[in-house]
Length: 279
Image (cartoon, rainbow, N blue to C red; front, top):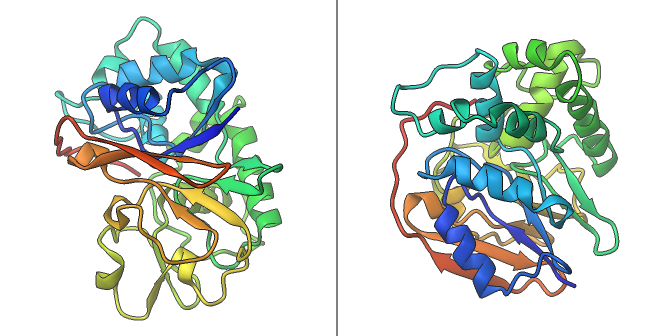
């Protein structure tokens, strides 16, 4: 049995099938770990969502910012264009089943036997792994509960931008979600810059990639993440594994086998540039 972590799929259904064929995935014995952003930008978000759900216990995904954006749209928050590629999900006959399944997915996964954690984006420097675990569980319980819509209504904001254990209610939840699904860089004091998307060498002065921050409390933990396609999967930091290789931007879809860290990739079949909004 092998466990394969796969980077952001974002509606690239054909490439996902090609990658599973390449790794000879057997749903009866192998397991998939998905970094989130199952949907948006690629042309087959509905097909990806249905397929991953159909795998049952053979696949686990964390939530990405585009997945949460989909939930926000479904519950009446956020904006989208008429030709938006999420429309097929919002108009599907099984939309409620798919959306209920999606909102019950975690923000953080752990493989305790192999020592990995996986999130979509990253951690602020102040969080150790116990804090990250606890914070993820706080938000997961709200997303899965009756207050889900109230939480989604409060998501579209970049504040607060720095961790404080005293944060409460929706400000706390918003910060947690912004870290786990949106963070790329922050300043020396841990203030988030949620709009930077470019390569490491072009980051703003006096800022750090979240995984390179000198005060990062999660050092030593093996962490898998997606979200930052501009990295192209290349990170020179011990125990940090970036696996979003920009399939929806015309590059590749990548899997990493957790047991030996071997990587497998297939080329993108299309180059889709999305105008979609996201949190």
